[in-house]
Amino acid sequence: MTAETINATTGNTPPPVLFWFKFYTGAMMALYALCVLASPVLFVLATQMRGDEKVGAVVYGVILLAVGLPLAVACALPFFLPRKPWVWVYNLVIICVGMTSCCILPASVALLIYWIKPDVKLWFNRT
Image (tube, rainbow, N blue to C red; front, side, top):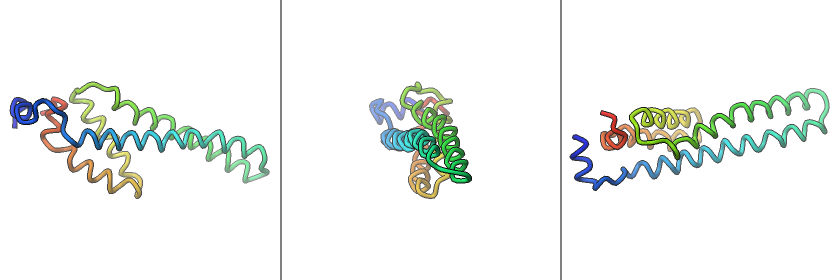
């Protein structure tokens, strides 16, 4: 299937999986943003704790911030990136990041099945 065939049959409309990918990456961005917002709460709560509890709260706060912030930004980028072949790969990586969670795994697998289809690759000019 060539790019001309896809454009002729779809009328240059994006494949339906792109809507679901945007929904997925938006939800993932929101989850990671909640992790970032939870880290200051742990830092404040740590001031009221003692000993090991205080250390644990600070460590968890640092981990939430260190992991949540880069992943929130990474999940926000697909909304602004152009239709280039490398963006298809970047978005594939974002889908695979979701496969690390048991809760997100079913959605990630379903999205992955449709993401590797030829019409999506052609949408991103990836042959």
